[in-house]
Image (cartoon, rainbow, N blue to C red):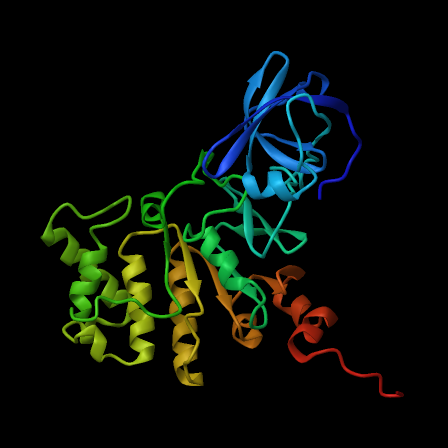
Length: 352
C-alpha cells in the first residue's frame, strides 16, 4: 500500500458503478496542484490513476474488487478520504510508484516506454515489482515453479487483463488492447507450448505471420519473400517444406521465433524457449537469441532454469511466490543468498 504524508482530506462527491469498475469523483484542491490526467493519487492509501480533472476535484477508475475489499470499502457520497500524491519513481526512468489492493500475483499497474527503456510496474503479491527492460538488451525473468513468471508475462503481453491500474506503451493507454493488437505496436511473443499451424509447412506458417503487424505484407509475394528471409535468418530454410506437426521440439521452438520475427517486432517476449532442450540444442537456441538481439530487437525472456539465463542476459530479475526478491547482473544474481535459498531451499544451520 502507498504510504506518505497526507496532503489533503477530501470528500467523495459520487461513485458511479459500471459492469467491472467504478468511477470515483472526489472533491480536492491542494493535491491537484500540478496534477495531470494519468498521474497517480493515493486515496486512503490506494493509488488510483486520475482520469478527469475538475476545478474542485478529480475522477479516477477503480475495480469493484478493490472498492469492496480494500481501504476504500464502504465509501459513499460524502465520505471523507485522505489524499496523497504518488511519489516519483527513479528519476532516470520517470513514471510513478503505484500501489493498491492485490488479490493474487502479477497484476500490471503500469507500462511505459521511451527512447532508452521499457519501464514496467507490476503488482505481485503484497509488493511492487518495478523492473526495467533496457532498449536493445536481453533481460531475463527467472524464478522457481509457481513464482509468478507466467502470470506476469501474460499480463505484459495482453493475455490477462490487469485487475486494476492502467497499461501505457509509448504514451498510449493500451489497457484494453487485445493480445492480437500487440503486433501492430511492434511487440511479438512466443509460447512455451508451441502453437504452430500444425497442418501447414514451415514456410506457410511464417508466410501467414508476415501478413500481421505494423509492417504487414500487402501481397502473397511480399509475405513469402519476408518468410524466406526469416527462414534463412533462423536456420529453418532447409526445412521450409516440412509440415510443422512433424517437426521435433527444437525446430518447433525455432519456428515460434521465426513466426514472431515475421511481424518485424522491436520488442520480443520469449516464454521458456529453451525448456525441454538438451545441452546442444540449448546452445543453438542461445546463439539464435543473441543473433536476434544483435539485429536490434529488445528481448525479455522468462526461464525456470537459472543457469540458462546467466550466459545470455544483461540483467536478471528473480521472482519467488509473486515477489521480486533480487535484480542485477548475472554475477550479482548468482551470488545472491535469497536467490540461492529460493532455488535450493534454506539450509539448516550446520551446528543444529
